Image (cartoon, rainbow, N blue to C red):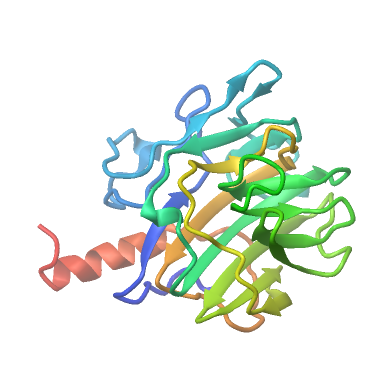
Length: 262
């Protein structure tokens, strides 16, 4: 995974959550709009990114930000967002055109380490009820990785692709009308099925539907890109040692050089 290459001029980040450094209790920072020099690790103010708010419903409170505690096993640099697998556990941000991936090229990718895979788990999306006709991304208990419009259609990998106890990179890309699912750089599914829609619901990472569980594990480096299908064939998925901030840094410097930024 070559994160050092800047995005094409036609592409932009819809969301960029490193999920690797706590700002305080339940703080989740989106760097998709701010200057890369406003690095939250140094306490600088952020501007323009989406505001993600954690759920606060009793036992289904939002995920925490802390060190995995066994770096030799997880190998995440710094902290990571910890989802416990509880129903209704998520971080949430209002609806935006940024979450409409129904047309044009797009990429969704992130790193995850599951402690267990014992139930259907919603990873992110805009659905709110079973068969409500809204898009979301999820795992089945048998290890299938899928994206679909709830109750309408889906694209899914074979069983056993997602496993617990290992660090995985997951990417979903749309190039033209073709949607592909990659796990650890290997293309596991591809189809032209329409699995995204323009929803009016807020966007959630975790259990979108109160009846669904969040993943039971650790998440880091979540990026959503519109206007660019970063991968259209299998690729080498390196460990998350190079932050997406490097890409933003290169974009910002290029824009400065071109006189496009003040």
